[in-house]
Image (tube, rainbow, N blue to C red; front, side, top):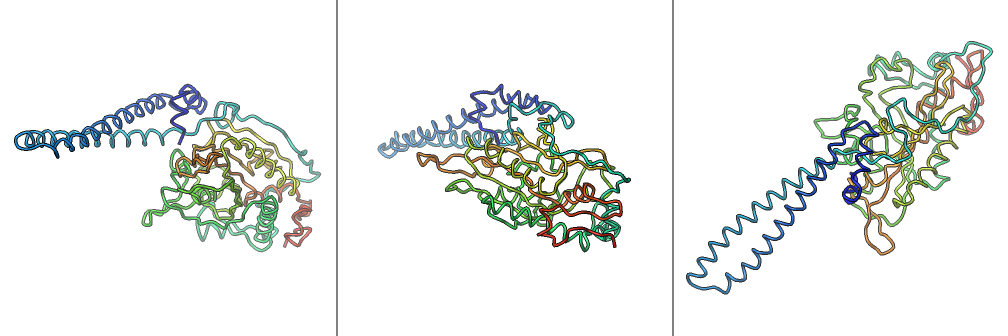
Length: 416
């Protein structure tokens, strides 16, 4: 949730954020009105309770007819207190609903617009020129005995797959390389739950505009996570931290890919299940921007290890998730598509998630304050696409990036 004090102090900043996202700014004024009603209701209820308490002392001292009259008045006061408390409860419920409806305030430097309005911050590496017709990752993966889409569909339906033989080894090598980098950088490794309770999923902001992409187990009232960001954000819910925390979460991830019919149906670019190593940081709000830059640098360090050309983009406001104030994506060049495709994403969620989940730290005066949370991808199954396509040879073999070889134990992947 956004900071209500910041909203009261500068409502125009929140209105501007809503406009940048392409969302309704009228909800800002509705939230301000609801906040005023709640505060007025709280004041009325407090005043009546105070009057009732003082009145109770008068009744204790009164006798006879005076006492009877005071008791009658006491009943009126009691009814008034109950009505005021009901009004307060209704006002608080209205405020909570509107408060949760507003996404995080967009960083002022984030580009305005939608999915196609990103800003390219830099390019790294040069697209390879092939002296043969390059094969796509599925053709290569099939020839290598690494990917089996046909049996994946037979067992689980479309957009499921088996990573087989060297494909399974390649994914494990990639994720273990990510773990080695993360732990060397001071991240604590976590293998996280992939099922979470509704309040944790809601706390991270995923049950808003993107709820249709999440798998829900209705009988158990649990959700399958699309990223270990969710359980890592919930890990310290209702706690006060003793300092900054950095975790690297390894998990299977599940996404319904609702609304993506017809997009990337070939291969393993857009699938319902994949594995990922995700970085997650808890820091003081004033350190969040610096931490965001560090997460991006760690992502680029990993990309350098797989030796693929990529670009870094600043995601436009209208394409940000509910919780993100700013997001940088690293997109690798995919030769057969002649396009860049996302491999990593890092988001600064400021205090938005921590406020929902009640994650705090103690400031220099020992007073609890809301923490900031950030996340960033360090490796995922989709990286296999970029590795296979960029490092393929004319005979269908694939040269393994040098940094990955100690984790895989192979220098070249050869067709069966």
